[in-house]
Length: 275
Image 1 (cartoon, helix red, strand yellow):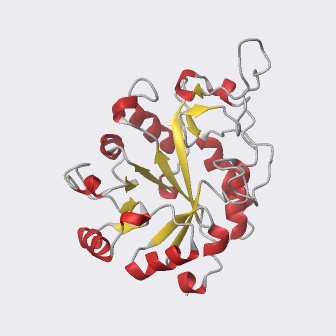
Image 2: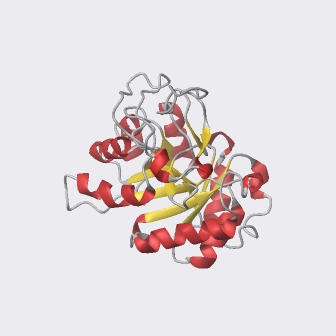
């Protein structure tokens, strides 16, 4: 397998994250796997967003000039229908990424992303773009930030079926409960378990109850021994979020199968990754 470079939330160093322009930018760079996040709206739409809320300085509220409402107020996406969410301008440049430029953009629906991004490919001989979809879910968020695992899994599986996208998506999450429920409905999908510390591996693989094709840990907890152990179980390993050149090269030396990075434009130019 060729070392895989995944564009974290799109070409985030160049465009506002989790937007159509960011995903288009990643494809233009030559990226074949895009990592993105989804949450659920009140009307049960899968909205591409890292956070369960919208607003703040990078997605100001269009109603912020009304009495009693601040333009930077954060509002829970699970308490809003998508028509309302789509009124927010989320194309502001993030000062954390000096090369990022502002563009007109909204938080898109996952269905729109799946339908639109292949259209920007310049070379039809290349394989379709793969979308590594992180389902944002927290046990304490059930019914408040998102549906419970069962209804959430129904929405995900039905959307993937509707878009005929099973061959083009991977589904990953920190929430083992949700992974298990999606797996029960759609066992032929490609799954990934996210982990940010060693405690996530204590019940693995008994939870989520199957061995996912991928286990994607935070890069600072990864070790050669962990890579070997996960490979022995049958899982590939693609750590996140690897942004420094020296860390990218270190992940490959450890035996990782790829990286998730905010800087695909750097990773693609590294001979040590692509040799």
